[in-house]
Length: 261
Image (cartoon, rainbow, N blue to C red; front, side, top):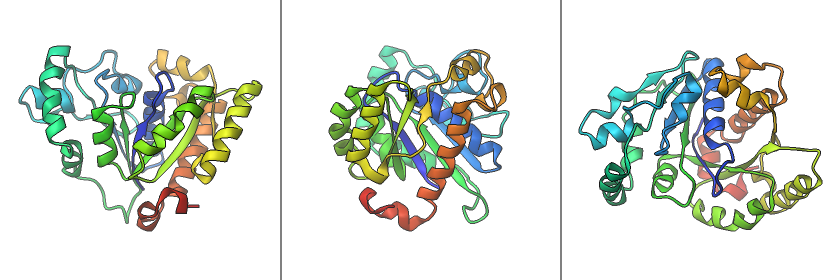
């Protein structure tokens, strides 16, 4: 199974929520699941039950001269979680030049993590990223096998699509509509426009707008626990199965995005 950089060019599309949900579902299915927070907002761990953003993390430990491996957490579902950690503006200003010089920094660190043999169990990595374009998003895409582009069904998604495709041109890409409301004709029209442009790269499984999602986050429980029969829960199960089928062999990851059926 692939490592996926979860990206978007718009804010508020649900990248972090989606990253956590997919990592949790994969872990609950007995698969090896790693969720990486590569966003300075440092909120991913809250989706795994923490009450406050953790001070330690992959970036924060490195910037403060501590072993980054010490920041790893294990969720109740069995997913391995790497927080970003807490860095203030001044610390980020000092740390970013290092990331600009060492574009493969994240890929090198993730390669050091001991993971199971993919021949014996599915191995997933989901990398949450800041809003693109971003130096950190570029690093995440370099570290990943493929890109998951998260979109809202609004005109902005269509307008920004060429930029997103150009930015991720070096990696296989699939796109997902998140927070979809089928009752709105505008959203149906945007979905049709994206389908015409993306073809098989647009996931057939949209994640519908569902109040169960923010409610589960507020209660600090997994969506599948808070609302196992919710539409969004069903959508996410379908999406994970589709992603597994989409990238179930090294050959498919080596092919260009337009060549993968």
